[in-house]
View (cartoon, rainbow, N blue to C red):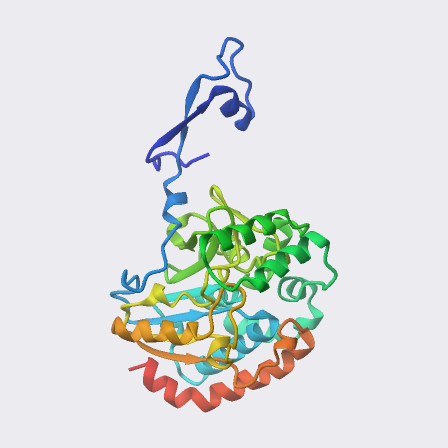
Length: 348
């Protein structure tokens, strides 16, 4: 039910349906076709935010950070790289906007909660921690309904609304672990209640409408729930309920980074697999060269952008916990190499 004082309108539905939805009996004399008001939740409608660089969503912010997704390997690399930069004096925790997409939403939530150093220690033993492995490296034995959704997502060569909606419907129909299980695993990693910082913005996608959604502190949900939604890869994890929507991975949108959310800001550090990989064909709704195009658009809006990713990646091992030590070592090595240049870009 909507929170009192936040009602912005209503719709009318048959009384019998409304009574059933509220778990209360309708009056005996009620006409089944009679209409009663059902209050709308303004926070639900505010989640949808069209992808647009011209909107300059980041205008007024000085330093901004964008974290994309890419499996357990990339999460480990991000944590080591970002923590390595912070240890070497790069003030990343001063970011005025932190955008997290897919697994990057988990790292963004941890960073905004100033828990990166803690998680950096935990991630060294990630293969031994069942909750983290369950979140970032799910079992490979899938039901046919899961395989159907996974294959649809991988084969998607465009981000047209009907394509995203079809993937969303397949995600809803897939026999995955429950949404609550996903939130428990996400909560273990984030280790925070509520919403940790007004800087944090988490992207996800409405499974029914195909809309890009942006969850913020004003949305009235926890960062754990939002990150679980943003990380809900179709067919692997269950979509998550956020207000009156069921939400899936933020990358099912034509973008794995959503750089438009920082367009117009002073400077942006973008962490993306696309900074290191040359994508040859369209896949998972994302076109080749998408990150390059987003960086070009950022520059057009006046935002200075700096993109980084792992210097080497084995795509076959992105979900392999045994690759974590290598990712950690590489992330820290790159942080050591980048620290001076990054400090000059970020701290000035």
